Length: 85
Image 1 (spheres, rainbow, N blue to C red):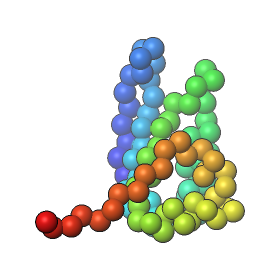
Image 2: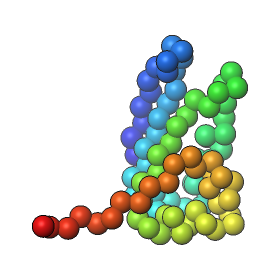
Image 3: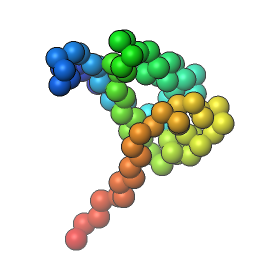
Image 4: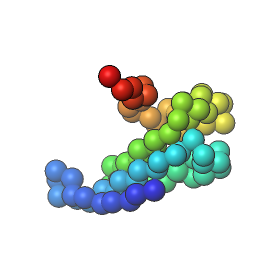
């Protein structure tokens, strides 16, 4: 996990959280992450999270228990495996 904070364009601060191997997180922890991203200051979200994981993370996001978190995902990307040319 990597956490960082930086200034936004309006001079305020926001935090960033990158979670690698997120497919290993328990459902309860993913729900806690949703609650953290739900917290807003001055009507703006101050925490941006990036979840990085294997394809099973995408399948888990499709579970009904994670619907609320899945609805908050703005960008989804799939990177294919690297091959030698």
